[in-house]
Length: 83
Image (cartoon, rainbow, N blue to C red; front, side, top):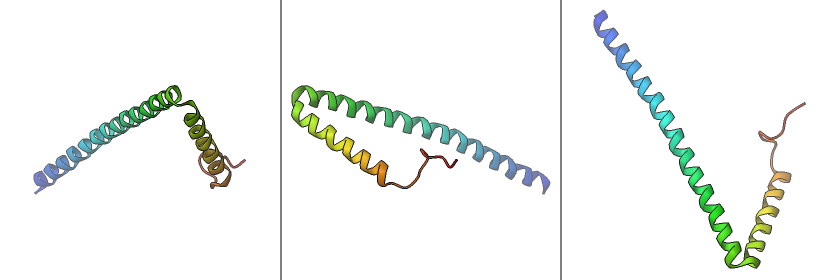
């Protein structure tokens, strides 16, 4: 009976190790996806600025105003520290 319990414990350890490998792989994939999206948005912003400067200026102004509004009206998050 003890041999069977050790076998189940080994299976549990193997499952946990596979979970750790999967978590590392998932974080790497998410990092690559986010970097690709950031580079795509930056490239499209540059192309928009080259093709239509007034529209690019209006878009960036709206983005800045939205970000400022959210920073003022949002709840205290990770950027603020209690003294």
